[in-house]
Length: 174
Image 1 (cartoon, rainbow, N blue to C red):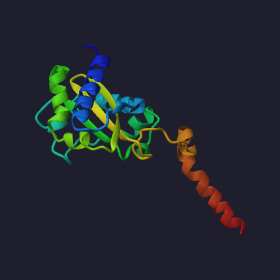
Image 2: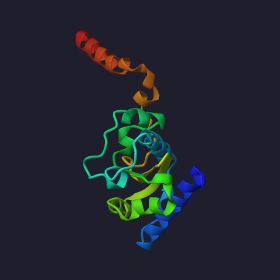
Image 3: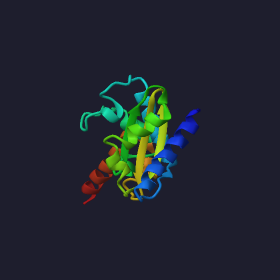
Image 4: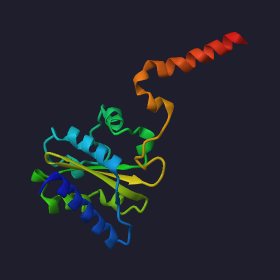
């Protein structure tokens, strides 16, 4: 099975699970797909163990120093994603029924059972499958916001200094 089929099969399985609980099906979130793919790419170098993926003890998840960069690759920022949920699993050879069970029979069920999640992005690399759940709120929709700092990310330090300098000039003119 190719990666696209694996992802589609997983989304169908997650939706079957949710509809059995009388919850709405998750819609595909393309920005979530991008972000999940970027995350899976980061995880692919980590081997599967009994302390990775769905077996991770809550609060001990690996911290990605590249998190802001991964968001930027998908034209997202933290405010677009703060209400979402990231769920990585590691299953050797991504055996489909085991992948699904790693989402529906683990700590991740609390998120899959939550009706506030309405969309899903899915990414896979190596033995890793990552599901990113999104909401229909501004803070969890994984929809890029449009603001000037975001539109001109290459300005870097100038983004910070220009308002400071303008404020300084206004103070001098008083």
